[in-house]
Amino acid sequence: MTQQDIDASEAPLIEHLIELRTRLIWCVVGFIGAFIFSFFFSSDILHFLVLPFKWGTGQDVSLISIKLLGVFLVKLKIAFFGGLFIGFPLIATQIYRFVAPGLYKHEKAAFLPYLIATPIFFILGASLVYFFLLPVAIHFFTALAGTSGVALMPDIEAYLDFVMMLILAFGLCFQLPVVLTLLGQIGILSYDQLKSGRKFAIVGVFIVAAVLTPPDPISQIAMAVPLMALYEVSVQAVRFIEARRKKREAAEEAA
Image (cartoon, rainbow, N blue to C red; front, side, top):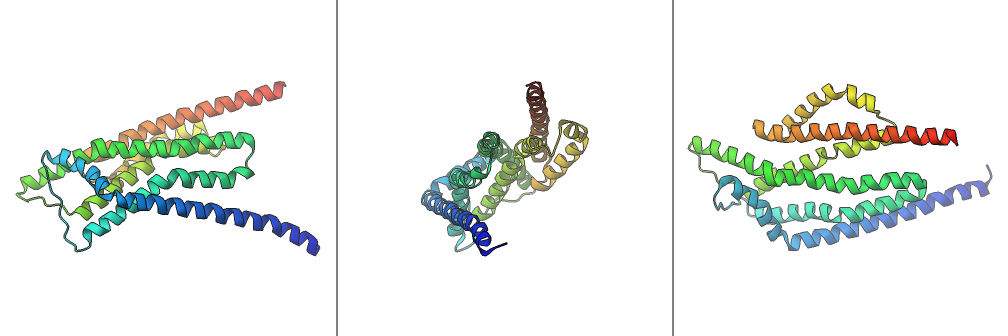
């Protein structure tokens, strides 16, 4: 290999690195902007996150802070998660624009639905936590404390960690159909494999639910049942993808 060939091979690499740097800068700028925005409205966001606690207890409860910097740390956490959530569309767009030049037209068309579906399913999981699981779990733990003669005085930082843990857990678990359908799209998983692995999926779903949710059975069932439904949706989606692929291949062979 001559020096000219080496220089020619290095040129595309440098261009890719420059492009990667540009995309990363946009991602960081987007996150910082969303972080500042979330921090500015952190008090409003916190009030929004406290609503399920009021629904679960049935009364106007004031959360406490046992640390001097507790409220400030809570605002930083809200700003961080808000920055990730609000900045996700820009971050996802930059990732797509970086990988898109290396994709064929049909690959781009196949990739876009998953990019759109990811935040939608995350919001579905987070909504289930916010409107159902949190009030039910809080009511359960409040009643448990009351029967033990314990006055419940929740710490704001501990409560926020609890809420964020559940939202992230459900949001990520609700990516199950996105992941399984994508694996079926690229041929790693098949309809027969998903169908035959259903019994293992049921066991796995309940194990995940037991690990990621509070110890009460209602919370575990609240995660397990939707995940099983999403698994079945994934099975049928992969079945549809395979049928469409076979139909397309048959048409190409006939032509």
